Image (cartoon, rainbow, N blue to C red; front, side):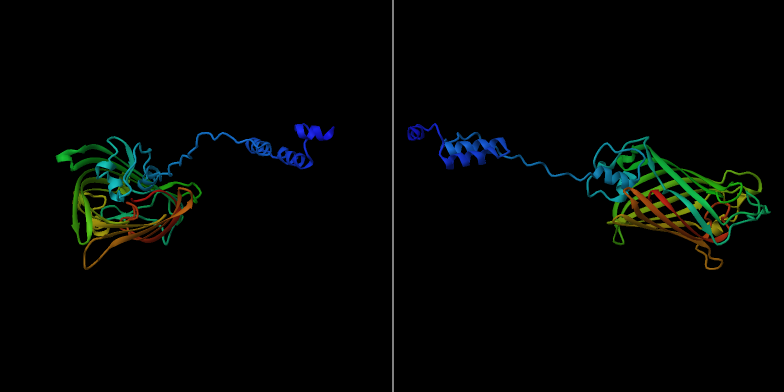
Length: 350
């Protein structure tokens, strides 16, 4: 009778049984069902073709890039063109880089130098009318100290004069802290408020693109009275030019206080009549040079500051600063020294 059962298909033949065992070992449900259908000789009804949908390519976050590049305190709410230049982003020179009025942005670099070493600390500051004076903190100042600077600006009005003129206000504070001395006093702090009218330009000058002319009024002082008081007022015109990742800003100024200041009447002889700032960005590294000079053939004086910003961790950057010459601070306007500092950078010139 066994052969009747085989004919009726009720008892599997040995080969089919082995195939069923193999199908049972398949983990995937759809693949296991296809295996059984194949043994039974059943044709599967084709379902609708599933067309894979390609995921859109990731778009680079230019908002984050440009915010980091400009070093702003607040997040952008719009993306900028990838062709936007550093100066255009920093000063909102184009329509697609404007961020609005009354918003805080960085102005000059923001940094912290836990260590700043000088070849000779100014123990006895002097000026033409006050003579020599004991520095704050006494005569035992440490040539090693900490230094920090924070600087921000805000646009007061935009789109004036046919859309080509913006008004800005800025504030910068730099402090030198005798953190390694016994009583850890602040040796010097400088305060620098200013207002600026930025005229948008677009013309070629010596192979560079001149993007703006900035007309400013700036006050700088150390907030002290008596023989340690230092301060001056200036008007200036700053010309901003760029080409690719290179930018240069030329700023001649005119001192308003001049000989009327009895605290530092000869300050222009040491601090000069203008400065030139050059900045170059090479990937995640940034290099800058700031030069001042009094433009005199005899008794030529001035200063040079070199900056190098380099990556440390994610968006945190290291900062190396070298200064040589006169006027690293207001109290040292007529004191020459070489200074080296290292720390972290929170924002760049650009």
